Length: 290
Picture (cartoon, helix red, strand yellow):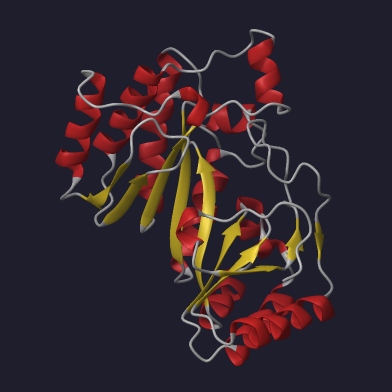
């Protein structure tokens, strides 16, 4: 398959055929993120995309899942996405779902009718990087939307019928009281957004990013492992979405958690408490990465 630059995908898409339809991220300004920095965002030529699909058909024979790369396929014109979805489902008889990252601004720019048409054409899941429910923190990390807009983006995707998978970032507020406020604000937004899945990653400093430079300059102090676990606990304790599949199993996390809410909440809280008491090992810093 033909790819330009490094390719990223959610952990759950490890079995998916990765089809690069855009290059880079349409926003690419988040202060904590080191992905796509070597790329300038653009939409690939439709002829190249369709050629890649034909190539994948010859190479793989058939696939059940496809993930659209890079960072925000939803930024493509709706008509182009519908053409790609039609080509994918035409090429692979066993195809069950097509999924993608979705930028909040791109979701806002689509009409409800466009999103519904994409869902009906087979775009089954959208991964939305919410990061935080804090309005001030969204501005500080240059996310490109405020809390009200982020909430509206997630609701639009869900109401279009997509399987909404939200990602949030523990430790993004740094040390002190803002850490707990970030967790509570994030839980409140998720409760309103009502995704089916929530992944909680933990901030790990990435060299070359603006937030990393803030750490070096003493303008930002990362949370300690204990504070990250306490923040995760506060988030988990205040989530009210029912049902919700919760994961905190990314390499950035100090403790691996996975379960369904509300029934698995007590067991996951107990795992965090065991780590806080020193009765369960945590991931060491050299092994943590975003």
